[in-house]
Image 1 (tube, rainbow, N blue to C red):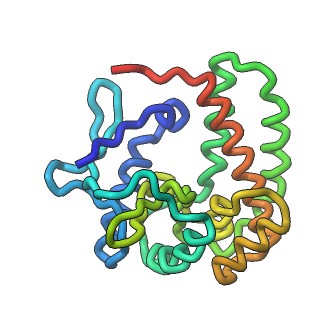
Image 2: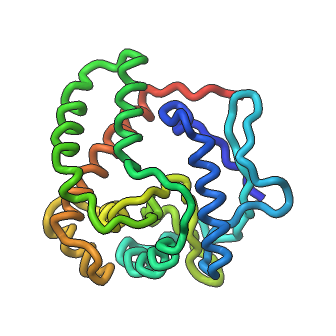
Length: 228
């Protein structure tokens, strides 16, 4: 089995245990539908658990090839089947997804005294002004569907890490795999996926993803993770 422990995510997510519970619930549901996913451990109570201030859960170890990653186009072609099954998931899910993380990260960085956050706040406000225009045709998403969250095994690709699942437009998951910003990258992602989203929507979600990733980089530089 594998123990997953919240580290930097615990700094910015007051409900990090809910994220871990979501991962276990969604992956168990998908496994019951026959989707290839990393499942909650059957050997110990999967959790989530809290001990000494740490949130953790137990998942089944999946033998895989850690040095092999699917290319982004190949993962985009896998997404439609995953999304079709996720549409049937009826558990409670958040509706702000990356926006909550952006807001929580900005608040944390402000508390610890990181300077020069105003450009990030301004960009956040610009993107929020257009949020409703691009928040359409929502459904349960993977939420962090980059190619590093697909394990390559001897029997094929296996999806992993559903703690960021939220109810949003499929354009967000496509943006996680676009690999570049701009209209051409967005168009290509939609084409590889097989439709399902407007290129303009994917282009918008790419910009949200870039802000999200940039702030995560600042957090990695300044956030102090407590050691056991």
